[in-house]
Image 1: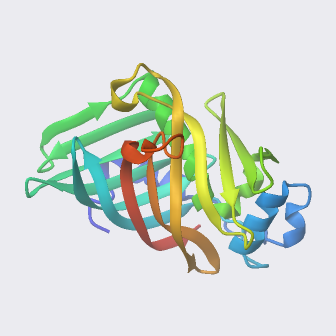
Image 2: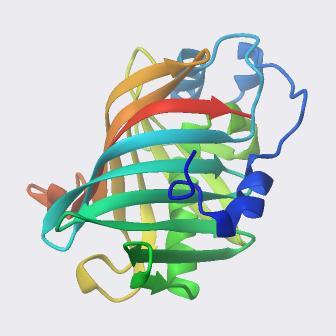
Length: 254
């Protein structure tokens, strides 16, 4: 892994997020007893019996991200631990020049840092609004570590094909709705996430992820092609808030 895709300044934090039990318990379908039917269906579909209940995943992905009015290609690595936080480190291209940096949340703090050519600041942001938005991202991306399902609280959704996964992050409950098809595949993730989409005042706004394909990594089935954005699915034309398209090519669980 290059320095670009795992910043040296975050090496210790990356290692802390990756650390977990050396011999975690193993998954058995009986562990999902009592969960909403949609959640049980998703987990039985996603996890093979005997799979270690890992607490984190390292992801390799590529895709497009919307910067201003234009879509830009990116490559990224991410460490994600639903009970601790995440670091998403990437390189995008703007005018043929590389923009490198990261988004992160851990230990109750969110931050963004992006630089042109690795030197000239493009975005440097922190504070309460960035932290709360990053906490929402962490909650929604918990579906990428289905082996950590026991660290969330679960309740039935408004329809039989949905379940609500709740995580308390930095003292605030984040409710994420999962939509699951009859075969158990995850098709959509949605929530009211803190943010300022389109220059709106800080607040909670509809945010969603559409899942277009899935793949198996070491016996664990994950979303592999996805699109994310504000307002997704709320009304005709609402996908105009889409800003992220990605394909996950590798997942290593720990």
